[in-house]
Amino acid sequence: MTTITDLYPDGHTALREVGLRDGLQMVKVFPSTAGKKRWVAAEYAAGVRYFDAGSFLPAQRHPQFADVRDVVNFLSDLPDAVASVLTLNMRGAADALEGTARQLDCVVSATESHSRRNVHRSRKEALQVVTEICRLRNQSARRPLVAVGLSNALGCTLEGAVDPLEVYRLIGCCYEAGADFVSIADTVGFAGPRQVAEMVRAVVGMDDGRPVGVHLHDTRGLGLANASAALDEGATIIDASLGGLGGCPAAPRATGNIVFEDLAFLCETKGFKTGIDIEQLIGLRAIQAEEMPGEIFYGALERAGLPSSVMKGESAR
Amino acid sequence: MTTITDLYPDGHTALREVGLRDGLQMVKVFPSTAGKKRWVAAEYAAGVRYFDAGSFLPAQRHPQFADVRDVVNFLSDLPDAVASVLTLNMRGAADALEGTARQLDCVVSATESHSRRNVHRSRKEALQVVTEICRLRNQSARRPLVAVGLSNALGCTLEGAVDPLEVYRLIGCCYEAGADFVSIADTVGFAGPRQVAEMVRAVVGMDDGRPVGVHLHDTRGLGLANASAALDEGATIIDASLGGLGGCPAAPRATGNIVFEDLAFLCETKGFKTGIDIEQLIGLRAIQAEEMPGEIFYGALERAGLPSSVMKGESAR
Image (tube, rainbow over all chains, first blue to last red; front, side, top):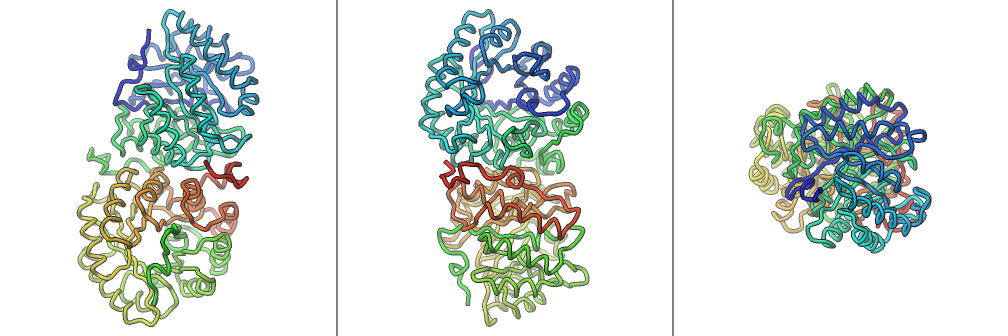
């Protein structure tokens, strides 16, 4: 049985590589299984420990995740690596629970319209799925964590602004359903740092000791400003992807997830401990570029390098 | 005679377009004078009021600023537009004071090595120049403001980390020399938001009522996170450039100034009043692209557009 502090110890900031799942939703050429393993192994060597390994979805319609079991198994052989997988229904959860993933990720939309559009369920039905997945997990041998990504929690392309009180209510329902933690998602990159700070502060205050995650997109350039605000208010699980891989179907030319390398640097400048060697991270993008030709990658550190003050091992201050 | 509250009224956040000065230091094809006027006029129409119009430097070595008088005159005809110019020596200041610029910008480096490398003067000599420029300004007809950009205040490619106490000492000297305000510059993009917050908080606390500016580069992706921190701590004059025009000679492939459009959006999400119509700003980059072919422009809003919640006129929250 996995406890939450096993995977997310106090005082540690967990940066999750979500490029293998969220990042692969819109790429044109999918990486090979060997390529995914090279990518994961290289990030692992640089100190990254949290990986969203893929989705348990029908392989015909989602071929980029056909090898999710392979990727999970590969990660499970790396000491202290935490593989999570997305499970959107009971079938996916049952399949995932046969494997060695240490965390199942579910999704609940903050707005009714997005819930119906995205997963063809009402929010109530989506919460029911979380409850059932948690029940199944409780009966499983390994009992991985169950996390819920609360999508569009900070704005919705369909409904516009989202009432934070509605988000807090849904998060309470997720905890009630048995989820170990929630991740507040700015799925379409609508949020600014003040809004993120207010929401993270409130959610951290809802339940003592439970970690709070954020999943931010850099769609409108505020991704790292939002991450900075989230870190300040106590979020400890932050999603990102190497090279900012990923996009948004609602804004085809927009950037995707926040850039992992730049996020790691942000954490370093703020004194949050991630265990990641940033110099080693820089340059890993070559693996992605080989595996996903034609894809656009983002990020400033890859171009500019670390500040000389940090490279010399001095404090960023 | 110009007073500081004439140009920078309380409760207003002044976003300064520095693309015409800082932005033009590294471009390959310089915009025509007509092109600069089109660019300025379009930003003015979108509500931008603060423009760094250029540098008073020898035209032979700095041809991109040969038309600085023209640009200043053009700006002076636009009601409430504030044209500032960079003056690095007495000759430049004397020339600028014959014109209608409402603000002269001087530079003092935070580190001795950078001061000698950048302006071939010790910091003490640079402060002496500020004193003399302020004296000349006091005898002038229009008496524009004098501002000092404190370059490398948050890190230096030559000396690494910079002692904040040294920065505070230099800022005190700038005030003593007669400067109306200082702008804290992260010239090479070394800083993170915690460091920016600490420094802005301290400088805002040094002198009641005097505004504090920041000049941030997005070299390592933290530009807007740093701007967000600066705004939270009371900085009210923020430099940026449309499309992020500008670079850093020390990091040739790195991005330049923070992106004006994205900064305006950040301010909007945080509730800071800038008077700028962001929708109108988006798309102005076409003027720059025509005038500076081959130049790379940055920014997320140009690609993704405003969130629908903001476009509908709802609050960003």
